[in-house]
Each structure stands twice: as C-alpha cells, then as structure tokens.
Image (cartoon, rainbow, N blue to C red; front, side, top):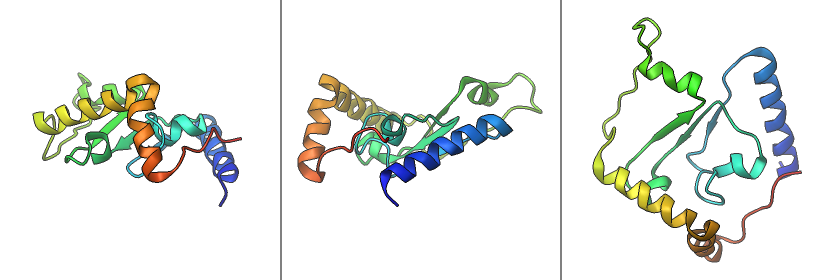
Length: 132
C-alpha cells in the first residue's frame, strides 16, 4: 500500500473514532523515533488518543511508554477505584532505561532533529515527507 493510501486510512480512522467515540490507539513500537521524533503521527499529521513506544525511545534499553490524551491518562490516577486503571510492568520507572530515553530523545531533538536524525538518514535513507 502506498503512503498516500495509508495516510487516507489513518485520517479516516481518526474521523470514525471522533464520530463514534472509540479510542484510537497508535502502536509506534516500529515507527516511533525512526523517521521523526513524533513518530508516524508527526509524519501523517494524525494523532491517536493513546500511543505506545518501546526500546527505540531509549536506544535499545528495555522500556515501554504509554502516552495519550489527559482524559484517558488521568484514569491511571482516578480517585474512584472503580474507574482506576492499573498499569504494571517489570521496568516501570527503572532509572537506567528512563535516563537512556531522556538522553536519546534529547539527542534526537537537538538542532530540530538534525543531529540524531541526520545520522539515521545516513544509515537508512531520508525521512518521507508529510503524507498527502
């Protein structure tokens, strides 16, 4: 499938999620931090309600990241136990992977991505532009 069709599919999914009230989740485990700091969402211009990333965010260290809209993320700390969502994991807030993630993201963000992404582009080719 070419990138324009993928962009059309993703924009359609966003419109359907908004119209019918379901949560749009983007799995950026493969796409996050490889071509743009904001992952495929930055390239497509479409943002999910929840997103996941993994060890690419920490230059290979074991980490998983979940982020999303405040309304959803606040459920982790909801005062009502019946609404509270538990998130558990082996490496939750482990200092070494978190430090690696901070350092990796700072490097990739430096000079508007020229530093880190310049090296990635030498290795893997240029980043595709925004989808039509």
